[in-house]
Length: 187
Image (cartoon, rainbow, N blue to C red; front, side, top):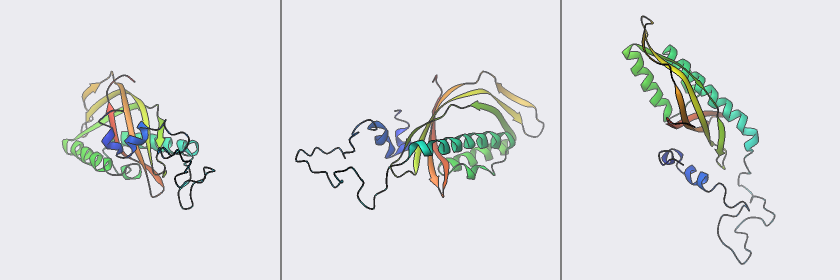
């Protein structure tokens, strides 16, 4: 795990690091006396605690929302229209994107590019309210244009691969991208 990504996850960082440990369902405390540590000996969750998260059922929904974010992000910067961003993003990334878009608008530029996505769900928190999506994004090219004249100002035709990690949060029943980290390198 990238040390840059650890702050993004907060408490999730540890969840990723130990995801393969404790498959027996134990809390990790050694109890040689046979004490179940507050758990039912049958493995059922105590009353009042959330049940297990159905990752297989949530995965298509989370991945679809991640892809929707990427599409809205792409069109927002191509059209200098951020009106749809709040439907797919939440703080802190929403504010960052709005400031970046406003800067581009004030400079009179638009960005046009296209990313090829290959996302996969890495994890969902126990409470089912946060998820991490990992992606290998391939940018086919990025082009900067004068918003008034349409004249192309710069072009990066070669594109490239980017390792991308997105933190998705469930906000009022909708999965939204909350934060992300990327590394420009082969994936």
